[in-house]
Figure 1: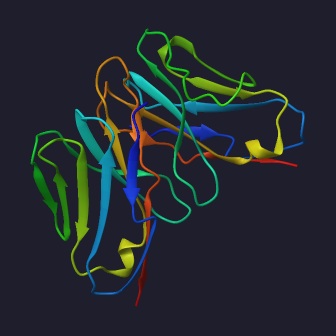
Figure 2 (figure 1 turned 120 degrees about the vertical axis):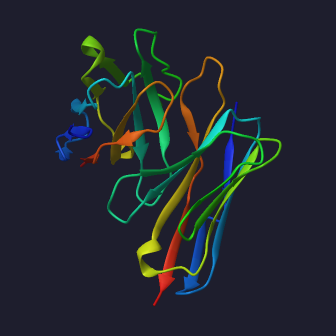
Length: 112
Length: 112
């Protein structure tokens, strides 16, 4: 079945450093969504990418969707302690299966 | 309006007992999802309801797990004869069609 792999599993950075997490699907996706889960909290939607090669920015966060719509990345510039949490990508395969397939997430810790 | 709510927020039960977890989705949302998240782990898809279609139960780990959604709104996840490995946070999410998912705060289940 469809799988979504996410790397790295953990990332420890110094405040001010950049951070990137990568997401790869075994199949072509109709869209990909990104969520952030703060420690002790629940996942919160960040963004959805639909078009091949799409790039979207939210302040210091840059999201990309690959040309083949099988991979995606989230890049954070100049991390801050408020960026701490686990970032999940979730791919939608489309078709009759409506559920998202979540990656296992990348847990980001930021040292002040 | 209000977000997704779940009850109870915490549930401690003895091994072998049955438990029911409740989810109230956002009004008007057509889709409802149940996920399980073990400590520090990713989201494990359990079941998905979309409108009046038959639910996608492909993620249920065993026949001890079942879920229903009454009137296209409230959902109950039932775990029969609980086992210690069922201990986890159970998250419910709702969405309009296949758009972004809104997660509830979760129910932390502890099986002793």
